[in-house]
Image 1 (tube, rainbow, N blue to C red):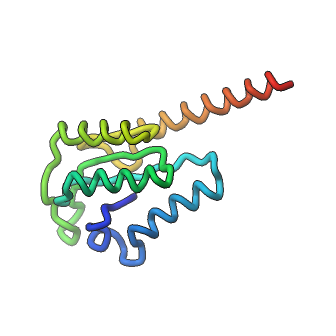
Image 2: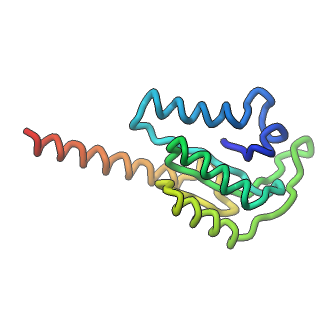
Image 3: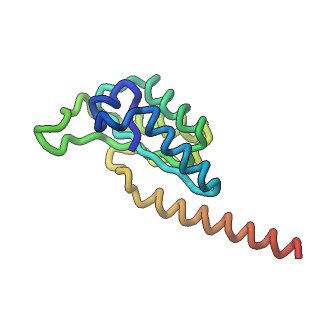
Length: 142
């Protein structure tokens, strides 16, 4: 799960910096070029639109394929408090921007979680489609 650069030190373990998170995703793709990479952002911690968009641009710059956006919900009193509840229109806005930036799939809504099943189903479909296409190309070469 990704965090915005400005919130990383508050949201994630101090050993997991913003650049380190990006490098991990980038390295996964480098080691296995056909790998689909996915990350998530939980919104509602006071982030600005520009920060979310810049994070999406950073992720696309390293060829991340899938992103999900959900509403942050405070799991316990020991965790960060919710700053704001994101509107459905704002989730739609980020989905449109993500699609325009070239993500292969964007799931965005208040109930979406990082393990959002629609994303998993989409990836399975996409992988099967690309493998079938590659197999057909190989048959044409024979």
